[in-house]
Image (cartoon, rainbow, N blue to C red; front, side, top):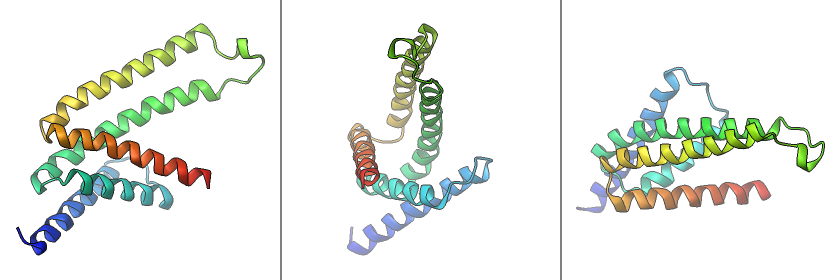
Length: 150
């Protein structure tokens, strides 16, 4: 495979990913701010490059990944809501036992979600690509944390 073919494949995979994200937004999800959209584009580019998805894999992978991301963000949002609405009266009184149980349940839900989507991802991508996906997500989060510290 020549350099031109690799470049064309890379461009087509990115275009498919961007189109699929555009369809996701058209389906009723709220529009992202320009900064969030830019960060999302960076994440898509990182994942696409590191996983080296074929065009066929890309068309199957991105809808599943987007669905997974939405569900995962919802779990994290619920955890943040439980944590952030508490006013620190005294450390021992911040959380009720119901809050603790709910947080543990949400974390279990996230683990179950990861297991469920691991199976779905493996129907589309290889084990090596899945491992690379996890590494890429970690690298992306580290990049965001560095950026926030600046």
